[in-house]
Length: 405
Ligand code: AMP
Ligand code: MG
Image 1 (cartoon, helix red, strand yellow):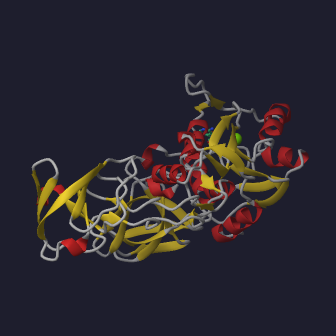
Image 2: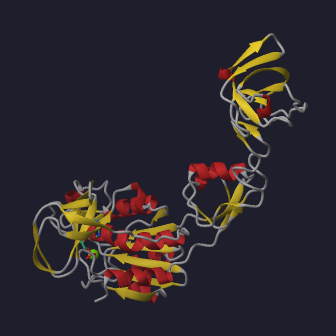
Image 3: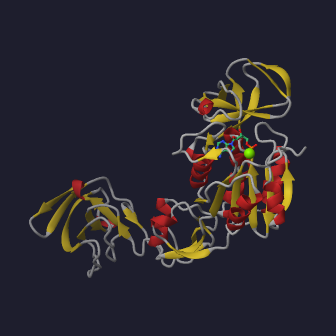
């Protein structure tokens, strides 16, 4: 059977970034991925700029740091100086204002005292040339790349793009992800389940996983385990760049999803991965549309999303690092465990002085979402009947930290 790593590699072979679009740089662009190198259209700062309120001076006039100068001008931010400073002269200057020609340093106001209206007494250490001045082009130079393709836009990046005059940029769009839970027994959460029925927890959970991973979920209702019920919403979902189905992919009589997908032109790439939970997971593609059939049990769906769907989604978004990045953690306590396949067991992961430690949490199996309450991760136990010892190191899949995005 296919290993998780091989299955992930197959998924990534078929996942391409969505074509970039020229997109306004509004707050809606937050978290999107830049598809061009953005360069600076001018020097920043565009002039030698004062970093302090105080007096622009010629450092050569103040070899001891003390002296009296004649104030020839007041320069406020947004205005250009008109005078060149000659020896013995200073200009009153505000933070952000351009330095006058002739000046090479700024003495902060707290080290000065006015003498009448036109003179200032300075009592400071000897000013260094360049003191309290940010010279032209120091932050960035005209033509220099300030934000490379692949950057995931943060608020400060949107500020930087505004600094270089950009109001729009080529960005990879937010992928629309179709979500279709299937099953005769599934009812909407607002309904009290009748005999043999169960509420649709996968729809809301997968939609939220999509949203957290930077996609836009499109819920397609619930399909029944009948060909006529499955075909129309699957055909609709295949118009999105990625479609997620839950249920109907196992070996049961009514597990019709893989057959319908193939009938509608989806090429299957794998159907079964050596893992627990989640073994029956299906992956295929039609053109550039990727399709995942996730096993219906909620924890199987959750784990398969994190292992296979999220990396694909990151690729569609244009992110270079598809993840998931597993951390290596030491087992916090002895744990006897018997399993026939590599198993993703709910666990609590915590930082410690030497790295990470992980503690498995009580769990009733792949339908037990409630059991995930104290968990923030899944620890991967290898196949076998083993008594794992405290301190042994295991791979751990994180599912609860913001930086998993
Ligand atoms: P299946 O993969 O269709 O064989 O479903 C496996 C198990 O998952 C069954 O016990 C289903 O009742 C349950 N299940 C399937 N779909 C959902 C869903 N949308 N929400 C909650 N449980 C589900
Ligand atoms: Mg089913």
